[in-house]
Length: 363
Image 1: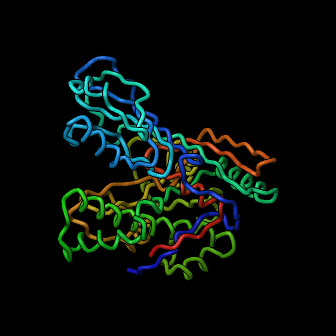
Image 2: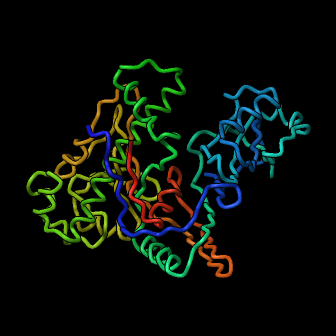
Image 3: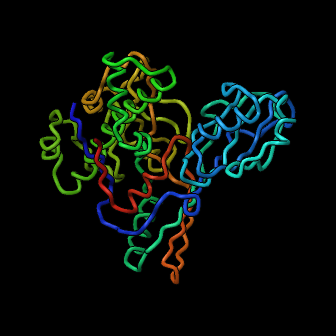
């Protein structure tokens, strides 16, 4: 497998505005999966943090309250370089200890009683707010144009670069662990590094599928098959599909924004539902018990397939539909303010990359 694979965006342009993730210009607000019951043996805290990762926040709470970190429940990890809110849970017996808790980087906004611990994945999604600076007239037009495209078509669901560590190479260590060439430092770190490797493989597969859409804008189906070294007939009839992400027989779809998975059998019907954002194609998270694509979609997936026996496999949305996109341009400051909602597991940085027109390179 190549060590360098282009992760391409569906729009190609260059847009040099300024954006740096910080508590002033980037905020993330978690949307819970369910309402809290108001009673029970668990205490749910709605927390706002800044300049802390979720892990760092949990370390502080664990130390300050005298609670084992494993007793604290959380739904997802939030960015360090942002102002973020999220929900965590802890046994209600620690409620009194919270009265003396004080850390300027952590604020408890609200608390609720609930009957169960919050588990990883117990969130609907996140609401993001971003501020771009040095946005001049032509740059504003480019941002508006891409956002118009996203509102009509949706967005690729790449794992964000922050998934791969500061040097963007932690997936290599995960690969070594998965293939038995390296002993893990500890179970938690091993799981994280192997998941980075799984994420890398997913992004590599998604890059190939995105490139099909781009090439078919300029080349015939047969020419595209030759360029990408695909089996003859893989793309027969595909160019007639109007949506950017082309569906293939044997692709695995999932009801959107959650639900059961199933293979594509009737291309016309599944394409119609995809255009309505009722269903969306999924990509491979390689591992144990992963449901695989079949028919014409199988060779594209097998190109990146790796046998990862120490991690569970799954399917991940390849294409998502950002919602509630709101934008405001402040001309006198050359600021562009943007907010939108994404389902859980999706990265706002993918949207930023599309707006900037970046072509991202893996290590």
